[in-house]
Length: 600
Image 1 (cartoon, one colour):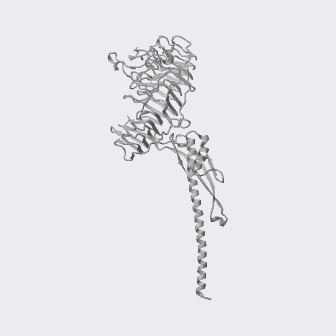
Image 2 (cartoon, rainbow, N blue to C red):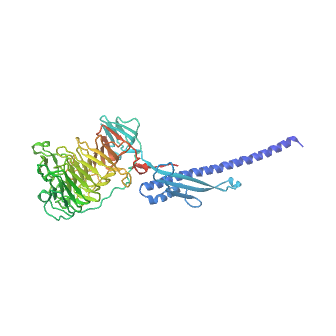
């Protein structure tokens, strides 16, 4: 045998075997690459599907989350059927994950192999899982306006634990001026900046969407004025109970029920308690109201029902500014020579001088509109208690002076006014948990009053009564001498979770003097709102004013949060503002601004 020929034959066998092995590895690589590619595409589809399902839940379409998930999976090439299985679900929070809402999507697809079939693996199933859950949004100060004023920090040192965002494309979409400063986790603006902006500011970024655009606003139900069934004025000067359905015309003094403290044997006032049984009482209940008798150490107990004002106009009509309580109340010395201008208290009915020397002036027009319930200014050391239940007020609820009022949620047609009296005496108002709807008139808080409430939402919207009240702004601490103290927090769960001060997205007001209450500049506009609290205050919740500029000054508690979302935002007033973003008090530990994240 030729040894050379034998060696050649062995080489041929080895080469043939090597080619087979090589082809096997190539085939294995091809099939593994196909499996890896399919798995990657399936994971991408599952991630997108889980996010879509969660977004459907977040915008209030929980019933369609499964459809949203499967539709997105299909768009990414994974249609259920022919062996492909797409399974959306809403699991509870996995162990070690934060509590909250989750959407999980499992996708399984059989993959036909090329070379592994020779080993008996003709198809191999690829399975992937994606889990999406809610987390708190990163921005807590957002100016929505796309072209005008954005975020302005003026004269205040602001520290925000989360992000500040301005959608304004203006060259000064973010302005820091007048000795102010801003420090935030992130700072971004669509346009440019002006002043001493922080070094981490990013310009020319893409705008963000309104994070509350799908929030379901509190709704109002229409209410009608009840018929007057008594003439003149009921004067209450002893401990007694006013029965329900007690609607007095008010007579020449435009006050249906007037409480007057009786004089004691030694010249002082005797404490009394007046209880209102509830249901259709009015018109205009006064406890030491302007032009009415003095009240001291009076306790008023109100039961649920409807309370209404004097409104002599048809549907609130009449003359210029007639759908409002009459205007200006001030110290006489503020306007010498008989000239009356803007002042801090605006709920008096007719011109004259009251027993405390305060001057007041009526609105122009032929009709008279009073508060529904008025505590002060001729009241001191009085207490008004509202027991829990359903309340509707036709006419402003007006509170001033050194008095304490414990309010309940309800519908406040023509709003709520809280202010010092003409001598600087300040009320304390405690708000029970729930939603306070200012339907027309707005929310006006001034002076040095003290506010407290847990689990509260104050919602400003249009009038829902037959009286026709004009829109008014949310104005708290808007005057230069104001120093409002508050300890307020939003609900921790429910439809108003995290929402403290809100305004209907459909209102922005009008700029004519005389409609509504005419506070501040004399405008009834709801397009400019102010929320300014002193340095002793804590304000935990979101301020959402989508069609209004918002001037804000306040801080959250150490374990709380502050969110301001408005058409434009000005942070000014207090020398220091601290905006935390600790949502541990809220259900699921997630803030009111929600975004989705993939956990696996």
